[in-house]
Image 1 (cartoon, rainbow, N blue to C red):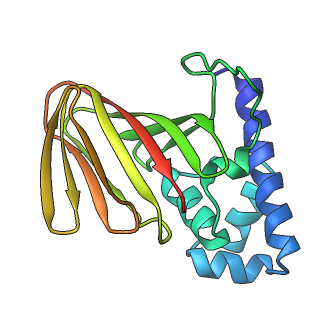
Image 2 (image 1 turned 180 degrees about the horizontal axis):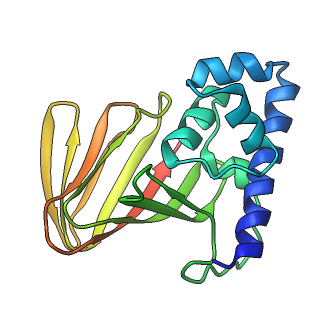
Image 3 (image 1 turned 120 degrees about the horizontal axis):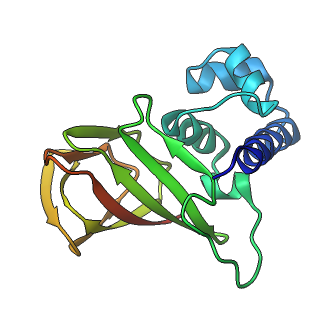
Length: 184
């Protein structure tokens, strides 16, 4: 994604967060405290100056009780997303990235990548969220609470996303994933 598009999407994310937060009469201080970040960090995100991690964006979306995609709403009918052409969220170490492809009112579609020998622990999403994940390339282990699932290329899994879950790639090559996340 080019820098100009990334800046536009960061501003869009920030504007959407501020608009929803203020419409609900939630102070910046109260929201920052609820999601466990500093007020300054939230201010930077709302101004489009920050580069929040995937975990922080999930916490914000959960606090606002909204899908992440609704904070980036720019959908056109017949839209085509080229590789690298949409908003990408990353873990702190950038071992895991999720590129938003499409969204509708209750559904988000992502292309995900997890680097070799990496693990990503996801925050539980809000109640009613269901994740469907297909491994497009590679082999990963998905853990949902105390259950462990081994998936290889073209294997799929569906689970309640409001539970603690993680993605682990113990292979020497990265893995490519496809996510469909639905909100009830």
